[in-house]
Image (cartoon, rainbow, N blue to C red):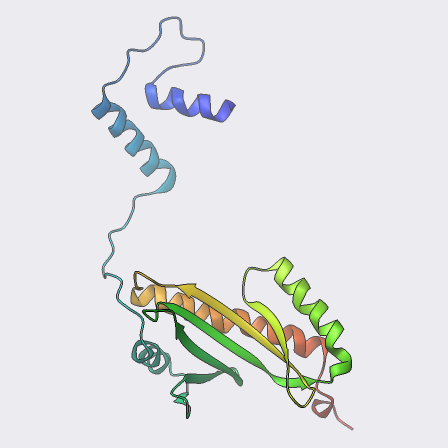
Length: 193
């Protein structure tokens, strides 16, 4: 609470140990002093140069092209692409397609006997990090498939800069998870015989 008293003194002009209480400020002067303090402490806010607009597969594909990433549209009409040799998909869910999901899948699968240790790895990852959400799927053939997912509600749309940040977040954090898996489970074919 000491910091709060110091902040109030700075707003009102009161000095520690002062004998006469400061005169109360009118609303306009108090507002101006608070605004000045916020600018000094936090910096001034920059005005947005663009307004948010709905996210669409076309905007995501345009972002992929602008950043020179390869992408494709699969048979189901889903947009996918490769990032550092790993497969990622970009989905839009919700009634107005307002939830953007970047979902990556590790390029290898594990034996069902490793399910418990992979679940532990995913739970550890999720407990220590915000992104991506890590989980496993067991395929019909009994192989364990690891998935990374970043989902964001964009009900009010996104600017190009916001969309870029979300897409890079999904791709880079998913790659971090897959790097951790590669380290934990090295590819035996990658080593010399």
